[in-house]
Length: 220
Image 1: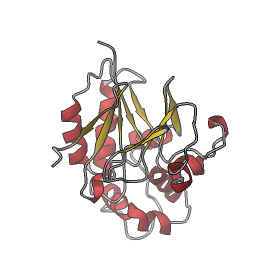
Image 2: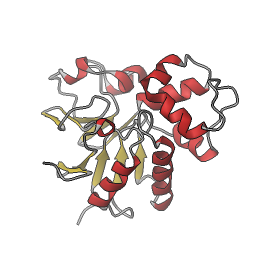
Image 3: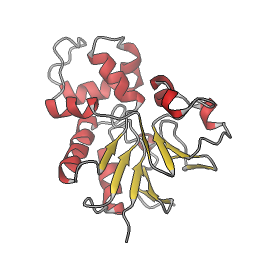
């Protein structure tokens, strides 16, 4: 039996959802690949716990088996820690992340805040996109009419409507997160797998090449 790739949607600090989903898909980490489409943090209560969990998975698996993409929320965290504007990060769920990482040190001032070394490395290693012969994986999406290698980070992480409504053939089917749907979005040129776990919906994994969906709990 060949190896599978499981693409996992936006987690947003929902550690229990991630643990349930992993129990359901039960991947063989010696051969199967796991790909996370970004937004591990913010809004939910256990952002640090989610990153800890994924780091442990990476330590258990052979190099390259666990692929982690960068989401717009990770970009906002890094910008916040580097001294960029705080308001957008804090009010887009970042306060939950700050309190989870630095509960005893956060007094409304980011001065002196630092990530644990393994977490800092995790965030720095995040990829903007990942390619296979049949799929392109990205957090937000692709700007129509722009070759993959010429896409800019802002679009890869943040784009929504222009990409989602596009009928363009991107050369391969695009697997993406970022924009939550009640059910996975299935279109000929794309599949959206952010199903709003942090909003009380479910966390989704897409098994490839079968294109089979798994959810962290039984659906009604």
